[in-house]
Length: 406
Image (cartoon, rainbow, N blue to C red; front, side, top):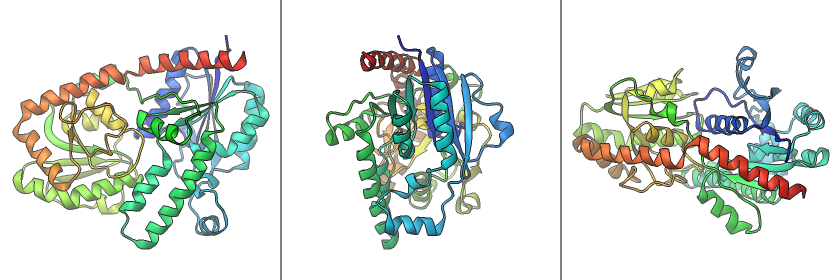
């Protein structure tokens, strides 16, 4: 029986809990802790997502150890250009190379002696040689998405030829980088079965175990206020797929909705909201910026709008909305990785016309829309219960550890 010590490495502090990535990491950390693992969380506290020391002191106190290393990962012009012209490594990985983090990692591996090292970003795989050199721990890569797909899709949607050229080249680099590191881990944990199929098509012999994002059903079920049949979206506005999706919704879809439903309102929130949204002046549109309590923001709103046209992984906010009994209108890409049936658990809309039609249908057929919302709630309860997901992962990992050490 292994000692159940796990070291989890993250390329940012999983806080605040307002976006899918942080929520997914938090669910994984809590799941291990609740299943008897000693969890050591070692996080980069990056300049782009910096968390103040007084805040750090109050989070992740339920696990064995939580430490951070300050890392400057700001985008800088000359290093970016140098990387583009003189390196084959994606700039995303190069930005996370840091001597202080490498040094502290070596010390933690020596003192904590983990059974498992779990890496929560492919770009932290630059430290995999150090991990293998300093420990015999079982190595795991948690995949929040297939990164190169995100950049491929962004490139395909970009009209600027220079930007499109850069993004295509970046996507190719990331693909080569990802496919190289996939072979180096003992276990890959994709977040969706779709992502797992991408891996298997490339390398059928790598070991995978799909772990969907799990939600706390007790929290998600809570309803304290009446719902209004208005639309909402919440997500990090410094994530390009969210930004592009909202821009498309407001420019191409919103005018048609308001012409047919002049009283319909749309609210959207998220951190690092650009000025073009923050200062928007469209009738019925409300930009909230970063909200202190995401659950409170969505509590009185019924219709989740997900106009995502690129990206990968799984939409945490969709699962939370389903568990809370919201009606979800999303593109096919937005629903990627969620085992939901179009028309039964959510409404799919891939064009501007389909989106406006779906919104108007919800307003006109509220009882039918409510049935879809309740089907979505049932799906979330049955397939995305974090307690069950965490227990199954823990048992699977212990089995693999025993086989690995035999």
